[in-house]
Length: 204
Ligand SMILES: N[C@@H](CCC(=O)N[C@@H](CS)C(=O)NCC(=O)O)C(=O)O
Image (cartoon, rainbow, N blue to C red; front, side):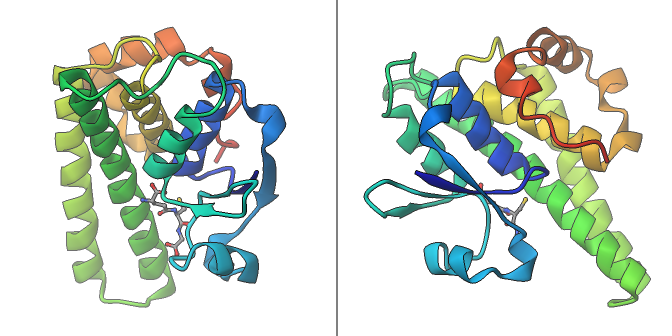
């Protein structure tokens, strides 16, 4: 299998963490990819031009990250990261959606800041957009703090860890640990695991 990969993408990190948790690393070839440069191989596999995108040994292209993670959950013999249908599955998928949404807001804010630096759009409009993303991030962190993940045994927890790591990478000034002590304690308890320590993004 081939995985279109970027080391700073939190969605790619989530997929890589699933690969490690499921012991599939020997079966995946990583394709270093800069999605913003529109490489032809990526566009041929994923019309949206985004990473991650997985191409199976049968040649099927799979995206986006939640779908890739669920596909990987059917491979190998490790304990599933996706609970069976029922309340636990809904809770896990909802936490994944919340964590991915934190990443979406942080990515959008990052892109808006880059455009602002290039003078591509009026600063007040960019500021309002960035503040909207920050408000979503603050609310999302509050929701995670109210019901923090436990361990690293389901896709919701994996996604939450990757999202918090992305906030550390892109918005360190947020200082979320000081205001979200349960999340901070939880992340400290799992971040040394190989699935997280080996997938950590390169420093800023
Ligand atoms: N919902 C997607 C989001 C993927 C995504 O936004 N990836 C970013 C990298 S962090 C990307 O490839 N961006 C390229 C673009 O926006 O054109 C997923 O979960 O895989």
